[in-house]
Length: 230
DNA sequence: AACCAGGAGACAT
DNA sequence: ATGTCTCATGGT
Image (cartoon, chains in turn cyan, orange, red):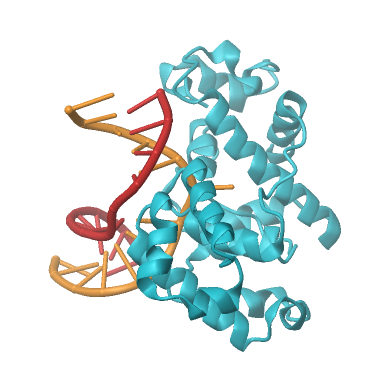
């Protein structure tokens, strides 16, 4: 079932080649800045960091809070995020940077990330998947909404419960899972932006293309008006 | 002009 | 364990 949805999304939208970011560190900072925030706003904040030669852990640690907050301003919650980005950089530098962390097992690395104040489960998994290339499935609001509307989940399960289910059902070698989870999450976000709220018709949903009697899970959920925005 | 956007922490219950 | 509040900008 999860494989089927993935195939349909990939068929419709094509590869998304995520994460939008040139370096692993840019990906990590972006993961924090995009918390409950539109990506277009995050881009401005990252441009501000670049323009001030501050898109580097040492530079962020050296900056005054007021300056950092001013650079992050377009991404919203700038006071909170200035502190969170700094917390992350402090950990990142103390742990010796990317090369040193690359040898750490995924579970240990995940626990360390979660111990940083301001990095919750989704941000940690964004970083693990898209910066460290670890086989971790990212659960976000879009994922909950989509699969809730497809009748696969209630939507209010704990984060870890959903992640466990996706990772259990989507198996393979580590390398295969990294590639699959990367593309899958990106496609879910793409689909949410593409089809939600703008196309009330179920025909516009790529997940409706193959609606058939065999897909009872899918047909049932396109029958009601509640399935309008997939 | 309300509502939303690729969450997380603090705090009360 | 599970709710509620706060943080804040920019686009629709």
